[in-house]
Image 1 (cartoon, rainbow, N blue to C red):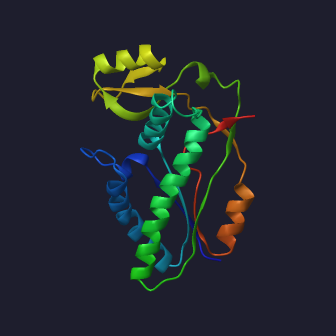
Image 2: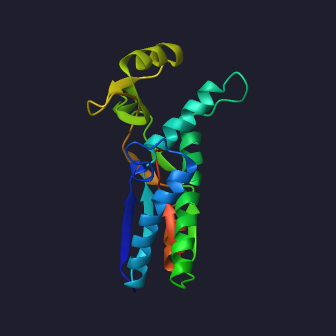
Amino acid sequence: MPKLVLVAVGGNALIRAGQKGTAQEQFENAVDTARAVVRLLKAGYRVVLTHGNGPQVGASLTRSEVAAPYAYRLPLDCCVAATQGEIGYVLQYAMWQALQAEGMRTPVVTLITQVRVDAGDPAFARPTKPIGPFYTRDVAERYRDLFEWHMAEDSSRGYRRVVPSPEPKEIVELEAIQACVERGLVVIAGGGGGWTS
């Protein structure tokens, strides 16, 4: 049985310093990851990709809240699921191109992954996970007051919205992930946060 490798791709790996984070930029940035994964596959490894989503989920949540007068608002867990699909698609497309370039036909699948967390986790009372773009202090204070966001200074580069980051308790789709890996698929799963039960 080939060895299994877990490749963790940070959400910031798809949006590099100085970029706006457009879809086109993320597609272009995913190419390096895809080529690295193809090298692992050619070396005989099975691969599962997981990813962060801080910038993307921040943008998704902001779109939802700013558009609230015109469209229904999505809670954070739904935005996480949406970005799992978004980032999964970007990585899956880049993988398809990289595999085609090598004449390989390894199937790649994205699984929306539910991660159960404890509703009593103290992280809910102390949001610490930065998401979305950087803001100046003035803009951060305005958004804090306007949208009731929690804001914090991040790496002396400005202010970002922060959300709870509770400890994971269970990966609901773990058996589905294992089944796909055992069938030889590259699996993209587990990106982002969780939900309470």
